[in-house]
Image (cartoon, rainbow, N blue to C red; front, top):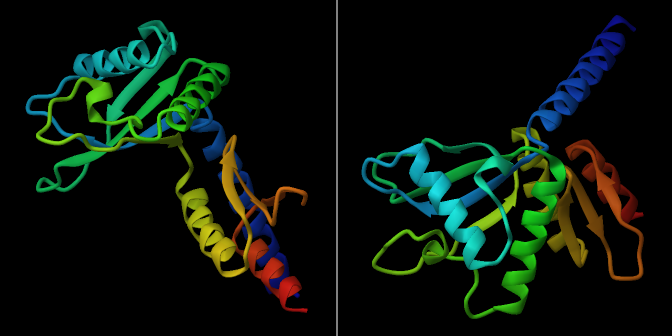
Length: 190
């Protein structure tokens, strides 16, 4: 009996920690596959985002950005991720919507390193998504695998939450953790 109570408390604490972590990254987006530059400065990163904003007519000003950081990666890697933190969630949402719209309207010229004014021998695609907590990243990976294996048409994130949808007519399911995926898998097998 004591073990079950301890397990319940641990689960509760993990959920609270995940909620706190989600609040820490709720105004952040992640730019993946961004080429590294020699002697790169924070100012250069700000300039790249400002350039992207002008290229796509988004209207992001430096004052809208709380912080921008290059994530560490192995020295031999030519690219790494950048975390861009906005001053509020509305700016983050409008930025992500503008990126999605641009990529949808320009399937042959999606956001790339040239849109960030980073000179490379070839244009590298840049993937821009909302930043997820490390636990949410793992769960999102599992949810995408689950979606493929179980013929779910849609798997996405929204405000740090992972969503699944069987088809356009079905209701979205919020996936809280991997245990929830296991329960869903069990329901599908019945």
